[in-house]
Image (cartoon, rainbow, N blue to C red; front, top):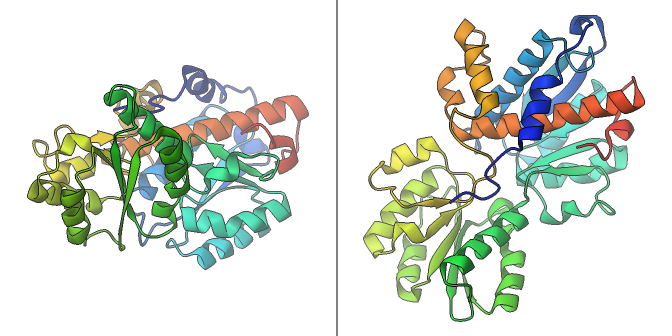
Length: 350
């Protein structure tokens, strides 16, 4: 299944075109993007690909003159998915002149939001974080890039409704999730949709890191939901696939959050994974024009920011989608307001 399954051609074209400048990027003040990511603990299966994509896009952009002549700096720091470390990363990079941040973690994003909003700095909340941050009247400095978890969960319900003939009044939908902020984020929207659409919602929390799901799937076998929506990560999908087989639940009724990638499919086994569903926010594969450009330029010359194997991963595409949007926002802001670029001038452009 594909949900929000493409980065628009306009954004991709802009990302390729934004770098064509007459002045050398090295001669002007840089535009700094702060990537406070989990590179050591919970999200190491996601964050390296996203960071590598951001660095590749910056390198490609700088090789062609930067953004309106200004070079891009991608500053990557580790917060280990610990909110306090994420706040410390934010404060450190803020002192270094960074005003555009991304934390790629719901707990860390939630912890840093109050400071960023007080300081008037931009947080690119990319496929993570608070669903209600789409309210720009309240969250004036938070810019969701792509659908929030609320929107993704709503899309999952819409897909299930379509599969069941347009009527959920007799349906039973299960929600299996890691019992911490990431997994809990869609619960309220699912409850609201349950009341509006008339389906029965069954909740199945599992403890971190997701390796102990036996009791949840035993209960799922008894409840017999029509579909399972899953807010589980990485190896948790492998565990879920084994439990589905053990408990007789059809894998083609398992609908994963977007955090399921090629590595997970390989670990489940290509044959065993046939039919599994994923709500995804970007187009996968290497035929995406911007991915092909990275392979044909940087990687063909051995100048990529990391191993080429990570380019062949949907999370790499996710990183390109996020930062193509951010780079284009910076270009538009400079074109409209001139230099210096600051958070106020970028506001409303991401």
